[in-house]
Length: 319
Ligand SMILES: [Zn+2]
Image (cartoon, rainbow, N blue to C red; front, side, top):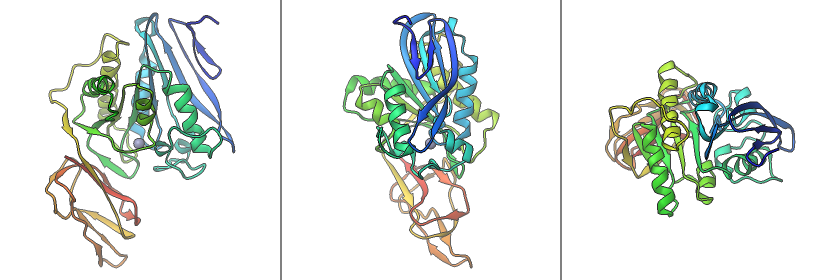
């Protein structure tokens, strides 16, 4: 093996090659086979890591990542891309919403993970140490889950390191999506990247278990522009005609009752503080709650299933 080989588990890629394969990841109760692609460019340069399918039913992100990785020609790449094509294979197979069925945990709340923990914690540890930490830039591709409609956005962290944060912002703007949010969520892939001084961006397009061509194309084009901004490729689709709007504050609204969710707003709507966003009814049409917006903002995602459980998200606002 030469020193400039890039390896993930048993996969290793020489410069100028693309290598794909299933990488075994022992998560304690079973061994997952995680599909990974290494695109090792012909010229040395930055190493970018990307994950798709951290949430297994977010199909636009998985489909877009597959499309871009399958099309990349290593002879036209500077640096390298390490792509985890479906990061939570058991969740993908089970068409699972939010959580990994192996232990019921949300993978994107378990980082940096634990090599001796539950299956999701072990998977998080593997992704953190084998994929994210060795990179110069990191992209995490998501979309609304099977029960969520979503207005496209990118998310970055405020790590407190101005040069890292400025670089994350550049990559996020290259994505060309509608909104930019500053993520406050802990236990995420972005938190791992941030803790290691790695610029990171989360991209979100589409949802509801669908993967229409237009959404996949939008997500794929954004990711290609990020790869161009990171220095890996020279050609990428033109920037969209709109600028990315920074929405620095966000609020997640959660149900306090279990029943039937009737939203009164749609994704992308701009609503005022105090406005009623819908109602949860019981089985007989009686209103259990009519939650109102805690802040003015844009409806970033909206749970679109009729079934609602106390404690589940109803929607998120950003503004
Ligand atoms: Zn997600």
